[in-house]
Length: 302
Image (tube, rainbow, N blue to C red; front, side, top):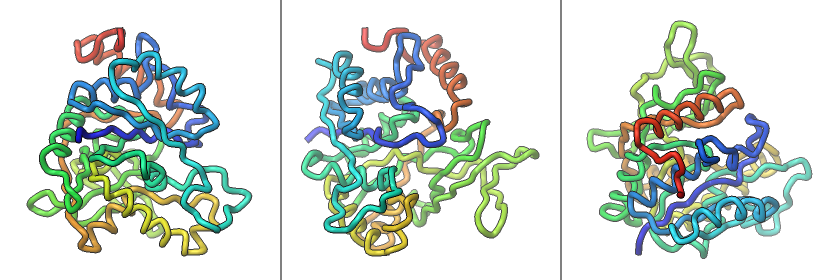
């Protein structure tokens, strides 16, 4: 079966302040997602599954269905707070979804083939889709997944700290550990630093990081279900309105439990995205430069 591209588009964009998934950045009104889908089609993907919230499904479909019709098959998954929680009660103050691994779990029954997962609001670059498709077709199985690894220095924002899953690998580029660093920034001396409860720590510019571009066999969805039940069994996770069940958490548990291997496939691509409002002009300028150098046409779907 041909691989599927799964796009995480149900996030609340709390730091950004608006629905950045559908914001126009390209010269003909393209969203960041449009460029990812365009690159995916060129790489060989024939289907895209959007994970969204049902409350904006009508508007979302009105934006994407007309331009994608006849170019790639589309399907939709709705991420809901009550999905897969059984008889557990959601705290009244919780409004945000359970996180990216819960979003993948919501694909159960819809995605039954090898798949890649990406964020809606990140630009990943052509090379990443070529590498991901090649892995999904030639290497991926239920014991072998992969993270597309970006150089940390190519993933920072000039307007605030970022969260990154920093990968540790062995000589064969197999993942040995992944650490979610939630406050990474370049300090006044130009050194990339992350902050945690114990203070400030330097991190190498060339560290490979996960930008939530991962490739899985369909059984990963069942792995997410198993670990989500463990996540919810911890009352602190259930009651904390900000707790999240991240894909790197499940990927790390899969690897550490001995279930299989997670490859880190490096890409030379430059990442950019819209974590903060101030990132938007930079994203627009970066896309305009890619259009100017011929990477993309001025009207992507014409």
